[in-house]
Length: 486
Image (cartoon, rainbow, N blue to C red):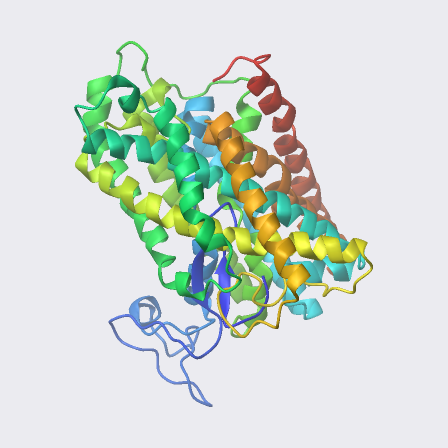
């Protein structure tokens, strides 16, 4: 992610959303405006700006609320549909506690990254990491982004495989039983068919036309959270105490605790965009940095607890890693959400694939001895705006070949691994843990003053990174059948 005409929000396996990063666009909301500050423009933190004006007034580009919106959009993604599964794995009280811990860790990492960006002048995560760890940090981060991008595409493919069979079942209620089976051939056909349809979208280098579709994904997720909450009371009364559902579990100690924690880390991960947001934040004082960092994670925590608790109470022990799989295909409100999310995810895959392939190109350049920028991906690497330089034929061929290989490899993995919770847990335990916990803790020890409080924060980040990584062997053993599935 680079400073460019747009900031691309694609962390946390999140569905890509585009937020303006230049002063060319402003976001206005109805309501009174803050009084102008000296020199022109509005300043959200002006002493003359009352609470109402700061809340519903004109939104300052790169102000506190604009920065909050960018980072929240980065984090909210497919992981939203899996937080109810966290409650199923470890109980509703322990699940909420882990979400709070995840939010607190995300706050520490976000605050530290913003402070370090302000102190060093680095405007991308990769530039900051390279500043602390040397030039080899760029290829290392590229490798992480490549893994993260492939995993994200796999996650989207799994969701598509969950959504389309339910839509087909709704549209063809009298179809044969094999068509109605959500885990049967229709699921495989849905994933393969979607991959074929997306081929024309992954080949172009410039995907700027897709940017107008991206904000629909956030609205669809908020819509589904509202639907899950509305359906909760009726579903709870219908399912509580029945076979396969059981009663409410408040705390469930088990080996699956680690998997649930990794999902929480994945849910809060927006850290790839934190440094660019800090670099453009209006008056990045310590107070404003704390304000942005705290509010972003508080908003996410409230949203996750809402959909997590209501989703779990709806289906109790039968809650799937994709909460939408629990709903009847004939539920009209849920069907609308499935349809919109299927469309947005088919757009999200090529948009995510573009910078993923750019990371692969930069890894190739590094091993060939070609000098590459410290920041990764390259400017406008997501293909969503700005003038792109001419592309040599051999580079174009390699880019298209890698794009198609990743697309169909992700489709094959999605067919083999139908549980999206497994995919998101592995991503959370590896790349998301590195970006949200390990790298911020490492950089804090180099850039920021060494106080006892900061060293305690480093220790906390490193400790919970080990907890998150511990889910990798558990998830692998579960997939192999050695550990019983939740």
